[in-house]
Length: 320
Image (cartoon, rainbow, N blue to C red):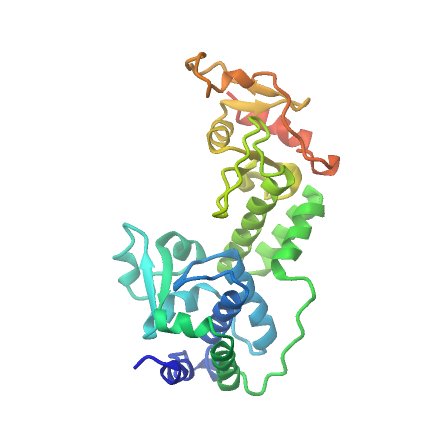
C-alpha cells in the first residue's frame, strides 16, 4: 500500500552513487520539489523543469551540501527514474534516446528531451498536506545530512538576484558576469545558468512593457497565467550574451517572428520600419505594413528604454 510509511521507506533508501559518502543529488532534488509544492510552484503530479525548481535546487545545494560533490541538476532529474515513485515522460521523438544508459549528458539535452517527470499521485497528495510534507522533508535531512549545520540563505532569492542583474547591470557588466560564469563553471552548470537568466528575461521584459506589445498595443489578461506577449532579444543572446532590459522588446508572436527574421525593425527614434522584401494584403486588418512609421510604446522609466546601439545593430545586421 502506497502510504506515508511506504514513501518514508522510499526516501530513506534512494539509489545513490557511494562516492564521498553518497551522492546528495537525489535528496536535494526531492527537497526542492517539496519546497516548490509548498510555495505553489508545483500544483500537480507533473514535475516540469522550471526556473523555480532549478533555483530551489541550487539554493538547497548551498544550504545542505558541504562535500566535494559537483552541483548538477540534470543527474538526479534523470536518474530519479530508477526510484519507484518517479517516471520520466519524454517529448515525441525522444523515447528511444532516453532508454539508453547515460544518454543524457547535459542540461540542454535533458530539457530538450524530457516533457516532465511524473510522481505517484499518492505521493503528491501527501506532499500537499503540511504535516506529511514536513515529515517527509525532515526524514530526507535526517537521513542524508545528519551532521550538516545548514548555511543560512541569503535574504534575496536566487531568481531575484538574477533579476537585479538584468534590471540594473550595464551590458558590459552583464557580459562580464556571463563570461566569468562560463569560465568558472562546467558546461552543464553554465547551461543551467543561461536557462535561468533567459527565463527571468522572458518574465521581466513583458512586465516592463505592462504586458503589452510595443508595436501593436496588444494586451491580453488571462486568468490562466498565459502570456500572449513575448520577450524578444534585439541582439540575439548568442551574439552578445546580453539579457539586460536595454536589449529587450515586448512583442506579440507574429511581430516577434517578423523582427527576428528581419522583416521589421525599429529605428533610433523608436519608430517602426517595415521591409519592402515581402508583400501582403494591405486591406487586411492584421497587416504588418499598417504600423510603418508608428512610434513604439516605451516603458515608463527611461532607464528601461531599448538601447539605441542595439537597435542600430539589428537594423544593420538583421533587417532586410
